[in-house]
Image 1 (cartoon, rainbow, N blue to C red):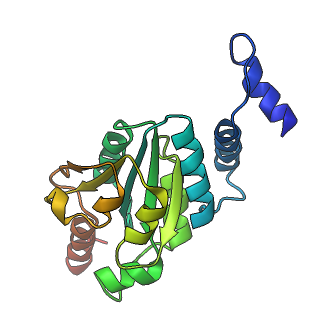
Image 2: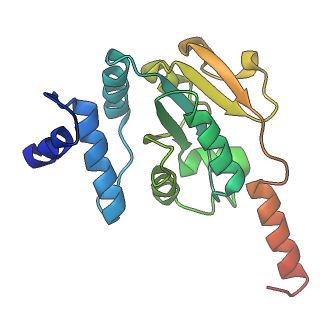
Length: 194
């Protein structure tokens, strides 16, 4: 860890104290690149990380979802959300909560696989799982500066809004949805093309 901290310092001009969040981000980035040891952060870890970022005056953005089959609509949405602040935290529905929301046949991808794919995106700083029907309790612990939702939500309808500085709604890109992809695949199977 000392060598990694020194590596951060030599990349800066003058005397520079390495901050805990910089070191953690560097370590997580290496693990992501190497493809091993990935795990989502616990609620306690994400709360601590959010407190560190907040103490440094860095704006925290939070969003959540199932992200079962990641597609360009998701990526565009997450990139837009990330541009609203310094750090983007994604609350990811567990398999059990996706099943409750979407039905018995979902999710198609395991929660840790979905989390790892999300974490590999450069715009995402952290992924944390939640098993509740809404992320309200998680948002209460993180207390983001900006809470982001997509689609046709109204700010006053967004779960956990009372624990965020503000709510931003980002319009989904037309033509991109996991349900739409699944329907297209089902049609191709039905037609014997797959």
